[in-house]
Image 1 (cartoon, rainbow over the protein chains, first blue to last red):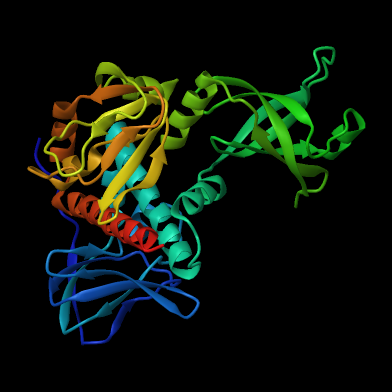
Image 2: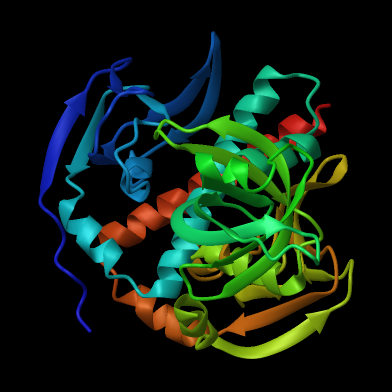
Length: 251
Length: 132
């Protein structure tokens, strides 16, 4: 098979010290260094966290491309000396990326997710001097390793005697638990309070059926009138569910 | 199980590894790619003070992908050690190479940039953690 046609290329020049991209700004262009050197960095408060020095052939600005939603730049880039850059518009590449074979795209998304995670960890370690890497990793996983879904579920008390099943919508899922949008009126049927155990039954978008016990960790208001949010944490999750959710998270 | 079955098509062999076994050794040659089918693995980097765990990966995670994405003759960039009994699937590298080979040089450049960035960030994080 022949290689696909490259996208149109524009060339730009920057002088020493000039900022090329700024963390927090919106932009979709991707840059390749043609001449000179670039430094990339992040800011956390007043602390500058150096990330990399780039030279001819290196590419930057790629995160906006790999994060499909329109997110602000995650790093800043500045010219160390006089530089020339190739600027790529991502439209052509986006199409190619979408058409990539599934496993190749999964591998790339996994690298992207690990990088996003490692960048957050770098900020944590740089700003909280007494933080331990294992703890930072664990906390980060709990906070960010989740996937948005819109999946119907049924849930009810764990008690064998209770046949009561209520309907909710899972809004996000992680290997640790779920966020479920529940109906206000259902508090008339069963009491919902933190610490209670619920049996939750649902289907992953991949088609796998999950039937697990989860503990109510939090109850929060929903912006949608007539609903509230249940923060649920799995209890003794089965090998099957762990595996199926793991595969779903990586897909 | 749409996604699973597509991925399973790439698994050419399965093996079970006992806890605390080094599956991939940092600095060693090797370009096999695995998928974690069951269990957890720890990703470790060697620094002056010894080994530091930089990530824990579970079911569905791919391991050994960095030398594959960076190109030929790359050494393993981190060690991977089983954190429990782990079932691994060996992936069809030839098929992946064929699929990767037809991507445009631009897209390959972007993926390579992403991998290099991950390498730098992981190295930096392990050095920061070692300084504690």
